[in-house]
Image (cartoon, rainbow, N blue to C red; front, top):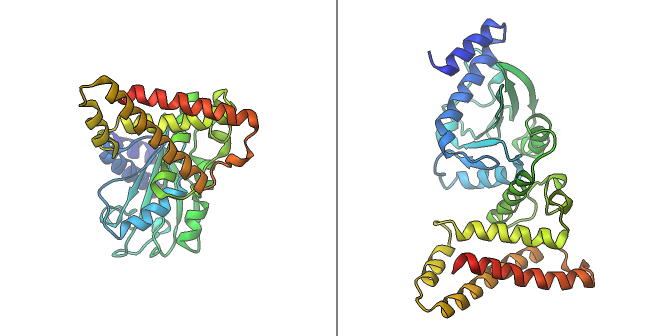
Length: 303
């Protein structure tokens, strides 16, 4: 008997409802299968998406707001269709067999794993959210439409599955970076964010101010791109690093770093994420210094 089966048996022995116990066990098993592909704080598709899946995933990506400790899986119909509650658990049945199901599974680690399961398909007869822990159904939310489900999903995540208490500075950074990466992926500023947990919106979280926070975010985003072998930067960086003349290499590294920073600043302006016109004279001077300093930091990473 595997570990999950043992847990399910224990829950039932503890008089937990067998329907919720078996369903949570099944959800844990699914998450275990895909755990090697998960990254805490991010919503990850469990397999390559079909063309029809992308619009649904993008809407989900915009809505799903995760604390840095949570793992989240996006299940397209090819997987979600086979992930169904026990037939006798009628109250947990949210979509008819044969319909295109889209599920989101979110897990909060700990001694007693907590799982949120959301059915967000437009074909669902009962779109909604269920939360499980220790074999019990802790809460359930039913909505009239899948759009309502997505609208209220951030609220349910925050209330039932977010990491409570104070976070570390690293966690605040990861949360903020993940939020901004979603903006870059979706090219829209309506991505849900809890401003009290974002150092970009609340710079004091990292003992900073809004100019430092702005360039900290830009640097963290770009330094990850520099180190990502699959990023679009890779060819340009590889080309620069192959230049034998050190002075030429530094110049081209500097130019690439400046272009990359300006691209992000222009996007922030276009999406009205930063209102540059509200900066004071002192902030404008510090902006210039931080701009130059960040170029140098990135140049050192590229060359």
